[in-house]
Amino acid sequence: MDEFIVIKVMNEAMLRLKKSKNEDCTKNTTINDFLKDEAFFFKIDKRRALTVLETVGVSKDKLNETYDKLTNINVYKKLINNGKIKPTDNLVVKYN
Image (cartoon, rainbow, N blue to C red; front, side, top):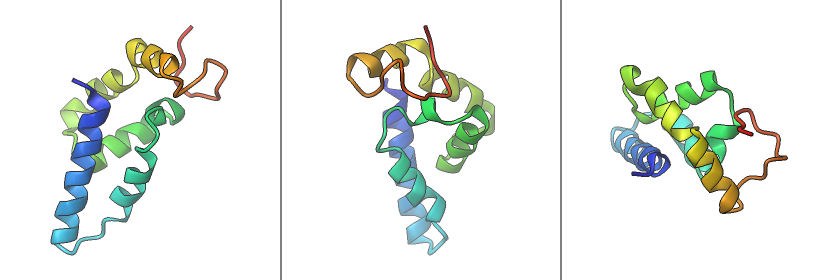
């Protein structure tokens, strides 16, 4: 399963939930914009990524595991092969 798609769906669900409860959904709206970039989690530091994951509803005990799935070498290679990132891009998470 593509973990990135799961995170996008979770954020969209959280956004709908907050809107239905008339709660502030500014963070989730911003995250929605960030998630238009499939390489997003490679471009931010881990601390910020964990905050994003928690905001979209990932449980605290799954944050690190989810982050690792989103930024593993296979995902990195897939993004390079699909032209979403280049090895020369200014990324926080990189593999050789």
